[in-house]
Length: 254
Image (cartoon, rainbow, N blue to C red):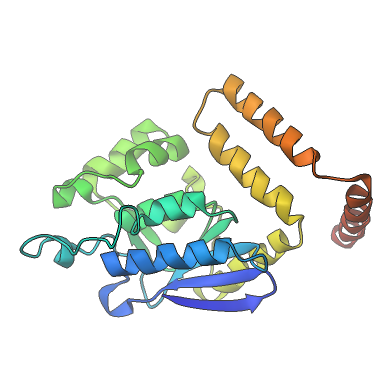
């Protein structure tokens, strides 16, 4: 892993095995989990950009490691290599900056992120069926919720690639940008997040994620409970200060 701090409040986390197309070995997943936990707990970090070094975002789980005699190395502890869980559980938003192919496990990592930006060169694929394995990092549940059941089945049953423009049209990707602008655009979004109230952003992420797991009626109660808990810690002075900032920012964007 490689970590950079290009702007106040924003960290960029690089999957840094370009020689292996950033295949998700046990060691890489554990390093990424550790980095996300550390950055998410850092009061100076408001957003994390996750991207890949080299030409690929990630080719997915390390099949060489998975297919070696005796199986892959054992994680150092239960859940220590749960990268998708670490992204979902991270206290601050995680922005995927998909620079190239995101295949199978790499695609599942993207689906777990809060916001997804893609280079025009990005492509996505689910090759579980082609390899002869089953998803365990959320593909069968997150993908149909984004693109619909029929489209998700098409991708999973064929293993065909999804280009960046179609991924944006289908709702997998928020924006498609030129390759040389990708990380800068992601950092810019991270800076926008960092300019907001940090407590509100963290609590909003929690409410969105918890609400997505339940019915609408239960989700509304999740929201109400979250609002009550959050507003109990907000003072009139806090709101007055933020109001002035919001008005000033609004005038610059009209």
